[in-house]
Structures are given as C-alpha cells and as structure tokens.
Image 1 (cartoon, chains in turn blue, orange, brown, red):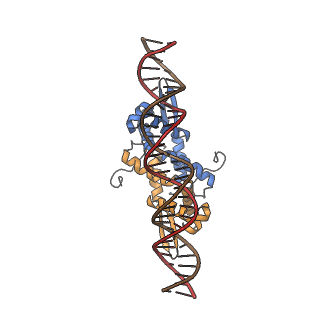
Image 2 (tube, each protein chain N blue to C red):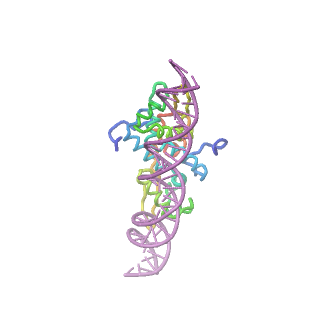
Length: 109
Length: 109
DNA sequence: CGAGGTATTAGACATCTGTCAAATACCTGA
DNA sequence: TCAGGTATTTGACAGATGTCTAATACCTCG
C-alpha cells in the first residue's frame, strides 16, 4: 500500500494517480446500495456481527450474491469474517472506514 | 431527496433501501480515480477553481471524457460550475463532501 | 458576421459490475 | 461416514460505466 510509510492520503493535497486508484477502490467497495445496507445492518447489531444467512433475506438477494458483496467488502478491508460452526460471521472494521473519511474530511473542514 | 426533512443519513443506523441508493450514488460519483484527481486538483488551487482546459491535460484524457466526469460530479452536487468568458470554471462543494463523511463517520467514531 | 478557441453532447464500443442458478466446499450431528 | 444445513465459487448474462471521435454549442474578437 502506498500509504504504509507516507503521510495519510487526503483529498486536500493533490492526489497521485496511484493514491487516487487506491482510494477509489475503497470508495467503490462502499459505493453500492446493497453493501451500504449490509454494513449498516452489521453495525446496528448488538453483537456487532451478522452471518450470511441473516443478511441474504435482509437485502432480498440470493446468498451467492450477498457472498459476492461481502467478499468485495472484505477484499478492501471494510469487514472481517470469522467462521464459527456452520456459519460465517462478519464484522465491520471501523478503522478502514475511518481512513476513508479522514481522506475526504480534509476536503470539507 | 429523502433527507430534506429527516435526520441526516448515517451508516450507524440501519439504512433504508432508499437512503442506501442515495448515499451510494454520491459515493459512486466520488469513487473513480479520475474524479478524485480532479477534485483534489481543484481543491489544491489557490483560487479554489479550475477550468476544463487545464483539467484534461492533468489527467491525460480527452476533453469530452473530462467533461463527462465533471458532469457526474456536478449532477451529484460535489462541484459547481460557472461560465466566465470562453471557459467554464469548476469548484468543489465542501458541504456535499461533508455530508458524505458525516454519514460514514458515524460508523467509525 | 465569421473565424477560432473552449466546452459539451451524441453515438459507438470495450470493459466492469451485479445478479442468478448450478456446482462445490465446509461443518455438525446422527 | 454420510445427510443436511450453511457458505462460497463458477460460469453466464444483462446493464452500467469509462473512453474515444465526430458533431454541435457557446463565446470573443477582428
């Protein structure tokens, strides 16, 4: 990752093409109505987690489709997963979202 | 818009399908490397604005393509434009970006 | 008014994305 | 070990997105 040993990426200083791609990738992972609903549902749970089987009915899509969305979120570090027994439980990674908002925040405050 | 007379949309309370679509649309407008570079370049200008003719060479794309990206940003309220003479000048709308970060912030802090 | 510069629109095309059904993998308990 | 429930992968397909060229619109100055 380009920001591992540099200043945090921020919209308020000119983004290099490479940083722009990296930030765009994470924004894209979030920029889907289904994935936003998944994330907000997980965040809203007492336990802070939810499994695929409860998420699929929530968004009224097939399990493979939900699995696909969760995979995209995970690939971008926005959620983590843990298998426990038959189910797989997903949690949101607040730090990843924090990094995105930090990058954008510089543009507005 | 669904938030015109309701509480601000936030990731930390369960998003309705409608709010999810609205937030996703604005995130999508930002979730592109070219558009991120355009926004960061405009923000970095002393004047706070830039015209199409300087933005096209910046991202090494044709003017129609840049125009298309600017249109998408404008359609989502992220930039505004003003024609002055032959040129059209774009500025970032910080409030729009602020609304996006506010919605996400609730998820991380 | 017309020439020339700047910007956008229209149309075409390749690629990416979201979705599903079918197949496969993973796990538990009989 | 295998039957049955949960999850993911694969392969296919429609629709969205990003890009270009060509055409059009907008504006200024001789």
